[in-house]
Image (cartoon, rainbow, N blue to C red):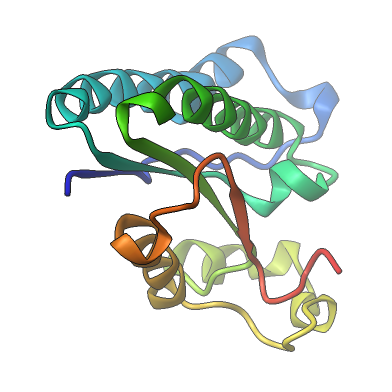
Amino acid sequence: MDCLVNNAGLVTYEYMRMATKAAMRDLFEVNVFAAIEAMQYASSLMQKRGAGSIINIASIVAVKGVAGQMAYAASKGAIISATLSAAKELASSGIRVNAVAPGMIETERLKNEMGRFPNMSDSIALGRLGTPEEIAGTCLFLASGMSSYITGQVICADGGLVI
């Protein structure tokens, strides 16, 4: 089965009053417009085969909101909305569309930014940051036949950050 994982993205950290129109355009160009274009292209190929799985990487920030990331949260919120609409539009073609909303994942980028998030692990129910492999596993599940009856869902892979 064909699968698309939209994982490219920019992250910014600025308070609402500091977000410039140029920076927001760049953010939306990568996080939203490129993802939608990839879905358009991939879904046309998948429709010819009558099956496929599209997985969009969103963010827990789009679900929860975070001070100092309004523009980033808005871009990932747009990905969630696009996921839901595409799921409804493509279901009749056998194409499933879902999103994964990672929480705090232990990446090099996050390690460099941990000063912004002191004691973040204290806010996570499981008491630790997630790993890239755990997000990949969630995507693998959504790409596989084990999720053949799942579409239009946002899976929050956040270790319990939002509870």
